[in-house]
Image (tube, rainbow, N blue to C red; front, top):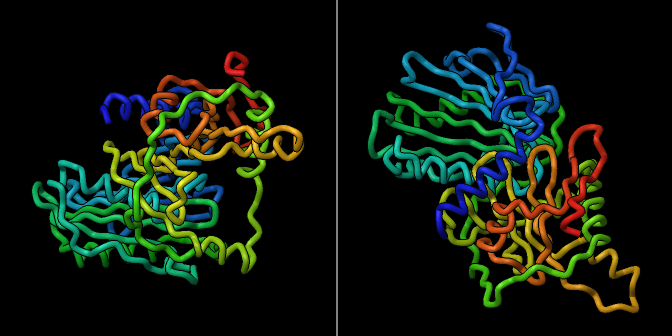
Length: 363
């Protein structure tokens, strides 16, 4: 797949994710010297000194603390930690952990490092299930001796910890990361998260023998899909044994790598839906049967159901609906549509704004 499309796609999604920031792609977080920083939505409080490393900066990558990062350094960057919190809008811990792994494994800084401690589940502080994942690597080049990543879910938020050291062994780095996680103040009550299972390859990758084309325009279906998207994003999931069991039953698998940290993931090897994950901070594109068309079909039983497949970009603040297709589109087709900015609807999923924006030219 041409890298051109990947670069354009990533730039488009980043523009969507930061659309509500006032001036730039990122803004400094207000920090008080020597004081812990508290994430106002999750309640997570991260100390100014983490694992013996001093906090050097904090950055917001999306509005209203929906995607933030803190950086910690020991000495002249001989050791470093980065702590991230970003909103859970799609996927699962195994998906975004795998995306973070790709970022480590393909960084020249670490010389395409070898896995030293394979991806394994762990039980995060204040939680009762092994809902987190961690892996540690041994660099094959450069100044670093070890590097690793841990990912977990805290309610409606994903948390990622990255660490690198020029002096610690992989085992020592793993212990350092555990100690840092133990120093963080976590919410006392955290909704039960499903046990995390490292990603494996799908039994057979998706195939697209017939190229998808634009489906006939249907403004009613587009509007209904937007309403359903808003309702789903802003609703609170009730924690019951049934919902927890349903989440635990989902196993994500991965199709072959598309390059540029863009990958297809599927739930239980589903052949009608897929998530196209872009980067490692929660931005993705969900592709599957159009829910709005399904609802309308129920009210028009005298008409044959229209086959439409929706393309929805999922960011921290909004869902963007693109031109519907007449069959499941290939990731290449999806990338072309998104890169061309053929959007139909923009649905806010955070804050007080409940207005769905519609591109009249696309209807």
